[in-house]
Image 1 (cartoon, rainbow, N blue to C red):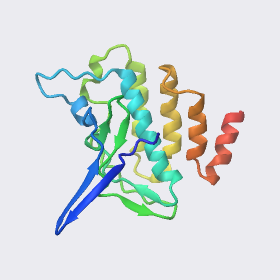
Image 2 (cartoon, helix red, strand yellow):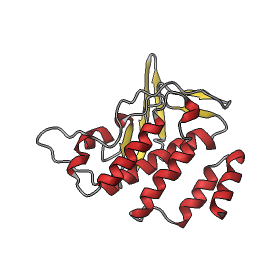
Image 3 (tube, rainbow, N blue to C red):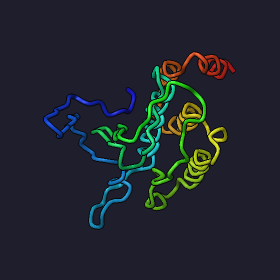
Amino acid sequence: MVGLLQSRGYYIEGKEKLLVYKYISNGNLYDWLHAAKGKHKILEWPSRIKIAMGIARGLVWLHHKCNFRVVHLNLCSNSILLDQNFEPKISNFGESIISNFGGEMFKNPKGNNIFIGSDVWELGGFEDEIFELLRIAYTCLQLFPSKRPTTLELYNTIRIFGERYCLTSGSEILRQTEIATASTLCEIVEAEIT
């Protein structure tokens, strides 16, 4: 399932507009990464990888599966909601733009919340993976869009981390080819064959 928050309905009366969503029981990612004093929310490392995979999968769907491209422009830990199974749901599309062409359509990234969080250093035992994920995050922040990985490349890289924790299955490859557009499908098939 693609990690996008789907609306259940809407209500409009005069200037008032209201969207209705399914209740998301675990709140947003920001609250888990930056728990207030006295609250002991701990998000284990494998859960963080699962969330990163879900976010990347949702972005791949937005950038490659749609007939038009959706660019979120405000993706941060506040706009990632977590359901009862800690599956992430991308929300808050208020600043998004829609584009039906390829090319350099992205603004410079804001870098306003790398999902790792400040308490990650307390998890212990995952230092190598933490630094590898930071390296991957750094590639996403390159000034020129042509130097950044595509969302599909990013998803494939993060999926490798998920395999270490049995967070992927054989059907994950099928989902990956469903997500791909015709131009990238050949590249994926070649990657699976080699």
